[in-house]
Image 1: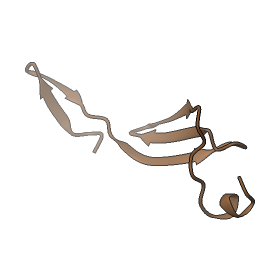
Image 2 (image 1 turned 45 degrees about the horizontal axis):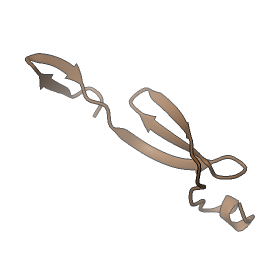
Image 3 (image 1 turned 120 degrees about the vertical axis):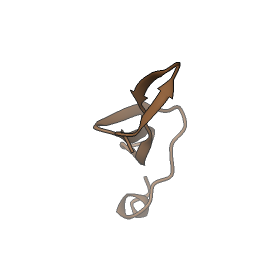
Image 4 (image 1 turned 180 degrees about the vertical axis):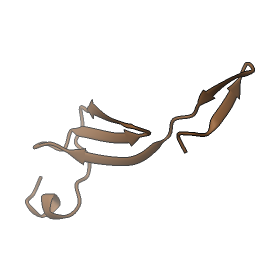
Length: 59
């Protein structure tokens, strides 16, 4: 997906798309985004929804 080229004003450039998203942190207010070769962390005001063992702990 990240190797696809998109023509913009006749200039080829890589397209970036998120492949995975996950909430984490003690308060579930950090959103992690995996896109191409990078992982981004975004701090949010509102908590996200946790699943799995973290959700069972009440986080």
